[in-house]
Length: 142
Image (cartoon, rainbow, N blue to C red):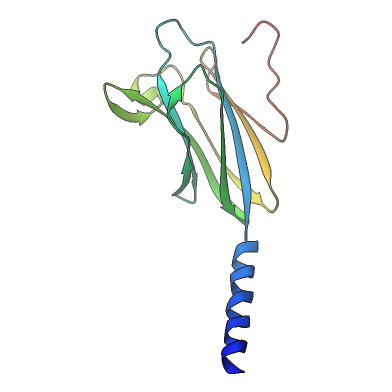
């Protein structure tokens, strides 16, 4: 009987732990890529300083989708795009001589599955973000 009770308690804690995460799906794309600058990139999701997932490498002209498990509650979210330059991965930032910082940072409270849409518009001053709905762009911008 004790063994059965131990297994039941262990299973209950396992279910409680599982219920304390939810999913975040990040949809991302680049706009206004200059000819000859279609870098190989990947996108990483970081929660409270810990990487929780990253996309497979691809050309920045391809739209990307990345789904990760995130802990419920309030957390610091960072979505960073990385570019491969001369065989080395580096953050796609102005500091590394790119035209914009291809990243999004904010504090966010997760309670249910969510969608985050990011547009890295290389003709703007940064990354455009929208929760739940795709980013709306002015006509003529692709």
